[in-house]
Amino acid sequence: MLKMKTLLKSVVRSIITPGQTIFLKSYFKKSKIKSYFDIRQHVQARDPVSLIKSVKPDDIEQLKRDYKDKNLDRERDTFVFYRIIGNDLYPRHKIGQSRRNLQFILEHEEDFIDCEKVFIVNRIIKKTEEREIIKLIKQYNKRFIHIPFFEEDYKKIGWDTECFPEPAFLAGNTYISFSKEKKQRVLGY
Image 1 (cartoon, rainbow, N blue to C red):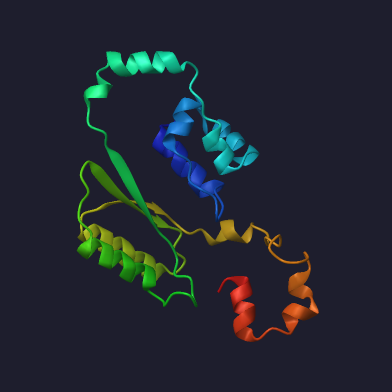
Image 2 (cartoon, rainbow, N blue to C red; image 1 turned 30 degrees about the vertical axis):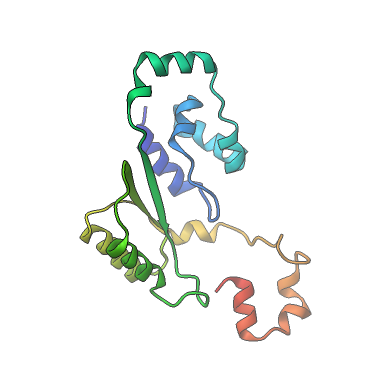
């Protein structure tokens, strides 16, 4: 049996697509998913929000009793604050904007009480930026999760045309008449 961390990494690398959420570990634990195959079936069968909302404890009263019996009610609450560092969204951002924002956070943001900060380096396309971001996080001795960009995975993903007035919008006269800048905005450049 694979460890949960290994399972999650496998899921991220093989089936989580852009725009989807990385699922909470607690979902997998509560749903008693034990194998990669089980996770893959669950992820592909439902959307992320439905997955998270569908987690329900079997016996709430037993959970309350366990909470008291184990003296968990006497422990301080702690939490983890995840920051996702993604690609620069040109032309909205300048090239290097995500890295500069990260640097500002690392230089100026205080530590929070009972809070662990974890950075997620999420599929940075430009390898030089990715290396600089990781180097910066390491320089400040912060914990991070690296989700690499795999071009071959993106090549398998089709176009999402639901946001356009019609599926063939990109081949139509309206789109063709757009300026170069407007076309790039439509395509998310």
